[in-house]
Image (tube, rainbow, N blue to C red; front, top):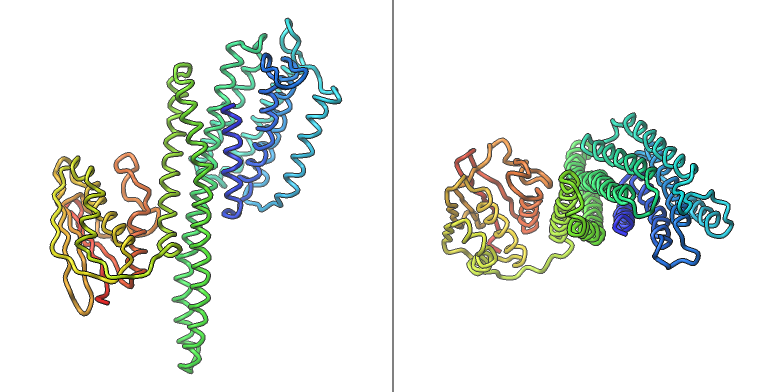
Length: 480
């Protein structure tokens, strides 16, 4: 049942990505797993001793199993040929529906599907040969995936290859059992579950991270396009009035496009939370229920899957925060920054106590701002200062503000590890990290959120730092 849940979770995840990616091969394999999962459910319900379906016996369950494996392996064989292509989902779903219905009729009603298991004798030659045929199809799939390796991220290709290898291993294990409760049968099912999780992780990499990077790259390209339009209009239009009108039209069009992209990011991030949560729950259930039955390598794979689901949940939460800056914004009102600091320090009380951080705040002004976003801004900067501390040295953080040329310049200074000045702009880009995930946790979204908040309030943010010599973040707010 766990593998069925993972298969359907994989479909839900892929289906929610259908509008995000130009490459529909992920959605194709998600649809395939929806139907193979349905056949596997019938295989489970027809299992010996379940007494759910009429006429249930070991042969009926094994027939459903073989039918599902032929459908699944053939789908994986086709997947390399639809890489980087857009497909029509309706015909694909109709095709899988017809094939699935024909298989079910052949097994349960017409009784023309070959016998696969005989009580007392074990597996029939057809069943054993079928497992070898399925293994050959999977091996052929691996060859085609490898031939298209230039279309894959190396990590994704490794995950797919490991997944196919484990599927082949499980198919071979299914050729040895005589009774349905034999050890080889149970082991093969566990290997298959691990294979599904590896394929799930590959889909996370190709289906989510790549489209979201593309999405925010499009936002950046829109900004660059605005600059180009402005330059071109100033060069080509001799009339100031015409230039202003044309520029206004271009700005309005780009703002509309950016708003649509931001709204799209918000909806996509929101809809993807549930399938990721489902896969995470099933992974943790697998770890709890079968921990004593799996070897260290299998437990390591499960740990990878749990960690991947946890990081994807963090990533989606960060994307929601990023998109909500404009889609869920509030009206400006007078905000006392001293009270904001009190609220932030209360939120970070545990981190401050555990790290021994000392935080000093001067008297801060009242500004016109979105209070919730101002809290988020200060909390991100201070929590980063605590996180990126220097070895065992206790963090010291100074927060201050000074008035200059009709605006407030805030500063958040720390004594942490600092950064190389050449990365001063890069750290504010979404998904950008300067450190390995094993060294410091995070999603690479926090400072991008800070930049978006400051820019929404008409200000700018920058950093002054030297490597191993602390950092000072500055940001500006208007007096009114």
